[in-house]
Image (cartoon, rainbow, N blue to C red):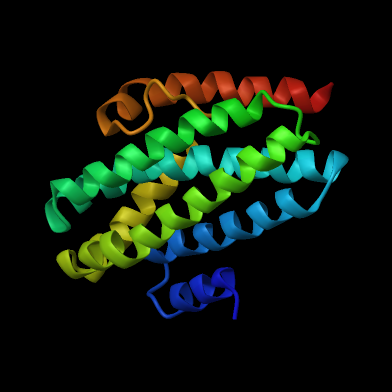
Length: 192
């Protein structure tokens, strides 16, 4: 069974709207998009990468804003800080990848390393952070976190912004403004 399918099966066993269930579904989609980027070329590769870039930007921002403060309380500051550092680094690499020729050997090599680090990051969250969050909060609190996560995703940037990545406070302060700019840029690009 593939990792994406395993994530979906685990998410299906959790209550509807549970924050961890939402994040596991997103991890499954991230894994699928990484595979698509590695296995396609041309416009299909561009579409898969754009989808992945937007999903990662939104997903990581929402995690930093909603999950990480709870994880700091339930899993510990060291765990939360480690995940924030990984997301900050991923944001830097994603910004570099966004500027590269997607059909180049350089992109493929850099993306392979990036995809591996993204999967390892997700595995850390799934093994260390998510169980602590789930055991440290009630079912109702987890569902409230799920609602807050969805709301944060609606105002999250769709492109990497390394200057604020890894900092929940910076995400709250700058995220809505950068999101507005990103979404306008996306709309203009898609209509061209």
